[in-house]
Structures are given as C-alpha cells and as structure tokens.
Length: 518
Ligand SMILES: *[C@@H]1O[C@H](CO)[C@@H](O)[C@H](O)[C@H]1NC(C)=O
Ligand SMILES: *[C@@H]1O[C@H](CO)[C@@H](O)[C@H](O)[C@H]1NC(C)=O
Ligand SMILES: *[C@@H]1O[C@H](CO)[C@@H](O)[C@H](O)[C@H]1NC(C)=O
Ligand SMILES: *[C@@H]1O[C@H](CO)[C@@H](O)[C@H](O)[C@H]1NC(C)=O
Image 1 (cartoon, rainbow, N blue to C red):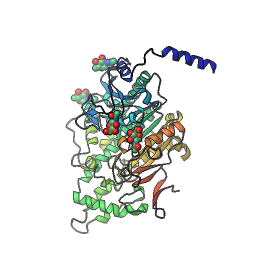
Image 2: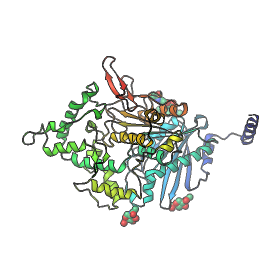
Image 3: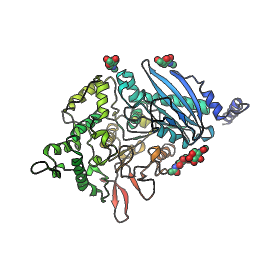
Image 4: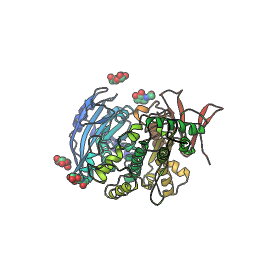
C-alpha cells in the first residue's frame, strides 16, 4: 500500500512538465508518433464548430462538401495503416481535450460496400466525452470495385480494418492522454453492424461493449435474398405494390392490439397474398398468379437445395418502407448483390444476373468465401463472453434492406452453440427488435433510441442504447427495455423490449408493455 503510493508520487514528480502543454500543442506533437505499419500520420487541432476538409472522396453524413466538424474541441488524427503489401486502411481518430475525456474509446464502422468514414457517429462521440475513431474499411468510396484489385482489400472490409483501427486508436489515446483507456466501445449499423458482430467473433478483446444494429451478417445469403427479391418485385407495378401494402396492413396491423400502421411482431402474421388473386384476367384491384407467387417469394424464407434455411424472409410490412424501397426493389439489380458477384465472386465487370439468379450463384459465392470469408455468422461467441464483453443489438422490424429475422437466426444459433439458458444469454448478449423501424433508422416506429448520433433524443440510459451499453459494461446493469421516440418528443415515445419479450398494446393503460410468451 505504502509502496504503491510512494511510487505514484515519484512518477508524478518525474513526468510533471515544467510548463504544461496546451491541447493544441500536444496535438501537434502527436503527429510525430511512430506506429508499426502506419505511414502519413498527421494531426489537426479542430476547435468546437470549426470545420476541416477530410482527406477522402466520401464521408457518411458530410454530403458533397466533405467538411467535418463537431461541437467540442478535438485533436483529429489521420493515419494510413498498411494491412498487407497490397492493401491499406485510412483511420481517423477524434480526441477530445484532456479535461473533457472520460477514459472511454468509441469505434465506428462503415455502411454498404464502403469505403466512407461515418462522420455522423464520429462527431457524436466526442460530445459525449469519448475518444472516437472511424475507418474506411480498406478502400475509399462507396463502390465495391476495389475488391477486384486484391483479396486483401476484401479481408480489410470483412474484418481487419476495424481491428487495426481499434489497435491504432488505443496507441494514440495512450500517447495523447498519457494513460490507456478504461473501457472501449463500438457503435455502428448495417455493414457496420456486421463489422461489430464479426469483431466479437474474431477479435474478442478489442471492445468491452459492442452496439451493433441491423447487421449485414449471413452476408452471402442475405445479399442473394435481396437479389432474388429484387427480381420478383419487378413483376408488380407501383400500383400493384400499393395494393399489397394495404392488404398486408389489413391482415397484420391489428395483431398487436392497435391499428397504427405498425406491425409490431411480423412473426405473428401469416400473410396470405392469394387473397389478392384475380378470379379472371388481371385487373387494377387484384394480382395475377405470377404476381402472387412473386409476393410469396419475397415474404418467404430462402431455403437451400436440401431444405436448409439460408436466409430469413423480408418481413410483411417492410414493403411500406418507402425511404429504403429503391435500394432493394428499385429498377436496377440490388447493388450489394450486383457488386459482390461482379467484383468478388466472378471478378468480371460484365457480369449481370440471369432471371434465375439464386442457389447456383450462392454456391459460387460460398467457394470464394473460403478465400475471403465475409459471412460473419460464426455463432461461437464464447471468447467474447468469457472476457466479459457485452453485446447489445437491435433490428428494425420494417427493414427491407436486411430482414430482421437474420438477427433472430443468429441469436438462436449462439444460444444453441453455447448451450446457454436465457439468463446466461442476458448476461452478455441482448437483442431488441424495434417495431416500425426501417433500416437502422426512420419509419413510423419509435426509431430514435440513441443507436446513432442523429437518433439520440435523450441522454438518459433508459432511452439511449449507447449510454445503456456504458452502464451495462461499467455498472453491470443491462437494459431490460429501451424507450424510443418517433419524433424526438416524449409524447411519441414507446417501450422497446428485450428479446424474447414482445411489445403488446395495453388498452386499459393506453401504453405498450413487454410480454414474454411462453
Ligand atoms: C505502406 O505502403 C506504401 C504504399 O505501398 C509505401 O509507400 C509505404 O512505405 C508503406 N509504409 C509502411 C510503414 O509500411
Ligand atoms: C457551437 O455551435 C452550437 C450550435 O450553433 C452553439 O450552441 C455552441 O455554443 C457553439 N460552440 C462554440 C464553442 O462556439
Ligand atoms: C481480377 O481481374 C483483374 C483483371 O483481369 C486482375 O488484374 C485482378 O488481379 C483480378 N483480381 C483478383 C482478386 O484475382
Ligand atoms: C446529450 O449530451 C450532449 C453532450 O452534452 C449534448 O450535446 C446533447 O444535446 C444531449 N442530448 C440531449 C437530447 O439532451
């Protein structure tokens, strides 16, 4: 005891500089850091609300002007890390001032097939006192064309880029603040959600807490399902789809106890498209046999040649997700699938899907998967669980881009693979299914619950997923419910439930409650 105190005093005495450097001076000095495999490391001290032009062709949340800013002072570090002889990843770290840092790191991910640092999340962290980092997943720009250059670029995208970004950021944090972080967190959605799940599988020691939304895992089957749905959807006109949307709501909306255009639990709905079948020739108010078949394909799970479940269905109700509709059901083939098969599976820039795109292409992709594994669906989370990691996940039940059933599939596979009772799952892995939320955000549901910077309507940890995760990691109490808001007000708020509980409307109290069905 005495010895420890003495050495603390001594070391304080030794390191105390004659004149304390300002944050801006320490930021400039940080540029001289040498880190193995890192080159072109530079820094800029950015005052609150000042902007700087980012050194890349794209940035999520920046628009075309590429000017980034945040509401507090930060030391911005840009570094390029050589991940192999033929690949590199750009890492960007935003370090709040010394007296504004609470000892936490927050990592962020990338969306789509990109390539673009997520500035929406990057500016969120420092305001909440996190040292925050982003990365470009190993290539610049939103296109997957870079994947054809080298398999190493795909490996970065799949898993390596986030890992080296986490390691590099931890080194920079230690250098800038003179001590290492207390806890590290990761926050992202969609492909960034997949990167978070994959990180828990591959590098369980990178993060103490992971908030991963709407993950694009089970990557190949889900991308194929999007492609198959895209081809089927083209068999219906816009007016036909209006008909289907109405019929889905008629059959499914009231099952949760309230007619509000939100299907809280699509699993409870056996949608029957044949109700719309024309008795004679095709008319405006009904569908042809071929069209009914197309709708059924979209709302059915994808099975393999031996009857094995490959991917979850697109939830009934998701066709009402107008903001994300064009990504999957638009006139061009689902871009995820187009680019993956074009650049990675076949490396043929002229590749186009046939009308029978499906199991054959999945088999071809699975062959490439052996060289460049991207699926990220390994249910063995035992190492992450053992080191005390906490995994908080969510998925919108109106997600047309990545169907929410995939998150259920994975949850159940982990539970099965690790043979854990519910209470043990609750100790490290919690899933929230968000009624009426589209892909990662938007929709008629209470989609703002602190899962992303622009969806943080409250800083209370019962209404903010990031801060709930911090409480879980640091105080041991995980969230049972999360209160989301549809428009940022308490009036439009409703409770979201931890799986396996589902939300049910209680007419007597005029509110939602979480109910576990036996
Ligand atoms: C990283 O790769 C670039 C381009 O190939 C090269 O110029 C640079 O010297 C490499 N730096 C390190 C630290 O490996
Ligand atoms: C930054 O901008 C916000 C919003 O305009 C303002 O409230 C805040 O005071 C500004 N901060 C500084 C340090 O200028
Ligand atoms: C893809 O094809 C191009 C052009 O033929 C070639 O240069 C490249 O090495 C190939 N990529 C891979 C990953 O094999
Ligand atoms: C949450 O805290 C941050 C940092 O203090 C602040 O900028 C933000 O406005 C707060 N959000 C709400 C909804 O109070």
